[in-house]
Length: 505
Image (cartoon, rainbow, N blue to C red; front, side, top):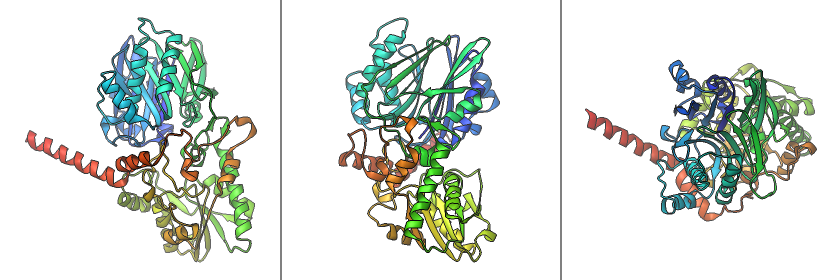
């Protein structure tokens, strides 16, 4: 769920990459990085933190050049420390930088092959660093002083054959240009933009179209699944499909939660998709609760606002903003531990008692993952004076881990896993709870011009489109990415830091 950017231009790209990463900040708040090239010299700045904190004026002045890539990180595979901030870099062949959004499903196999067969050392546990080294190894096999588009496509054909999982990538090759690619299923998004200047055409790759808008680029199209788009330093563009055609299955959660509403992904407006989610949810409430006594519909900011507004309109119920969001608090379900998430909710949202006092309130959220945030918000609503609190989720119950780039790791951490809707309602403290049906969610997102074969709905359905996810994988995932696992890593890292500090006294 990270955000990635790549630009090949005729003007300095540092500020435009910075601005693009700022509007993609919602995709990752753990770390940020920018890499640029000028006259064969590479400049890199990356660190933990938000974009605004990582880059100061002195850093921006050092990021010179008309070519560059950028990344905002949300930790899934690997650790949540500064060592795994991206872009990653290897110096052979040519000098390659890479920024990756997604999660690979065969990382241990790749790491083993890199170590034993290709004698490549990895510095982190990140699947992105493994992907970079696979790419570098395959490019090195081309064995040419000058890298041609055909050689890139040849190398990428082998990369696609070796790597499994979800990935959208921008890569920079020093002295040559930037190329982007997307996994054969098209699980994670990547769009191509163009900007005409007196000096020539400039090109941009990004996770969402909104990043193009801010930088003054027009949306040309989505990068196709299994396609490689190569942009030379001078602006020449080449593309080829380098993986066999298989069903196009983008992640449906992009439209539920991840993407900004002003983005267009795979020719689907996120805003319109969320409006249709609200329509479908209203239909279900009318069917299940024909005699409901809802007085007011209140969204949980921000991603549920569009769905909630349409739901209220269709039901003929008053829509009100009942929570004020502190925008300097990060996303709570992304936070590393349950206790931290609990503490954050009250800092993140503050109720307006006037909208709750003595009223039967329907709260609308985009989804319910662990249930921590939902329970806390319902408690806030009751404390603000609500007579009854109902809850509606624009997404179906999340009962399975999402392994393709979201931090929903251990099944036992998902509130809906093994529970009925009534049990979830009781657990989060709602008077009743309505989930979106999966069929209705898919219908809300799909439309004829989108050319989508099907959607990745794995966290709802348990059906994993890459076909390589089973019990052994889940066991390893829970061991690596559960809240307990992360707590152990933070404790160990803290002890290491203390030891180093002690040795320096």
